[in-house]
Length: 115
Image (cartoon, rainbow, N blue to C red; front, side):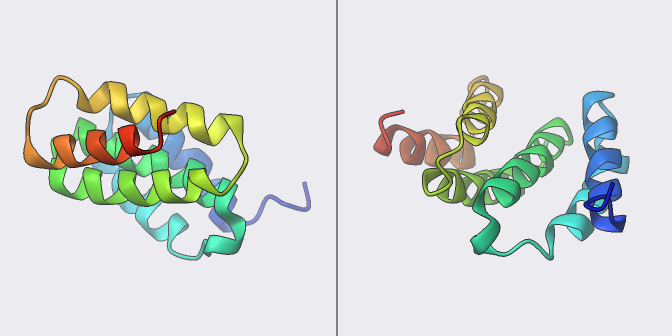
C-alpha cells in the first residue's frame, strides 16, 4: 500500500460518492485531490479528472464539467491508456442528453480526435 497516500484515499472517496450519485460530496474532495496531479502523470490525472467531470455533470454544473472534461481529454490523448480513453468516452455519453454550449464544445473536441 505504498501508493495509498491521502490524495489517493480522497480520490477513492470521491469516486465512491460519484458512483453513489452524491456530487455535492464528491466535487470538493475530487477538486482537492486532483489539484496536485501534473501533466507528467497524464494517465492518472485524466482518470481522476474524469471522475470530477462526471460528478460535475451530476450536479448540473455543465460549464465547469466541460472545462474539466476537456482537460481530461487532452491528458488522455497523450497517456496511451485505454482506460483513460474509455472514461473520456463515458463523459461524452453523459453530455449527450444536453444541448448546452459546454456539452457541444466537448463533443467537438472529442470528435476532433476521431476516437
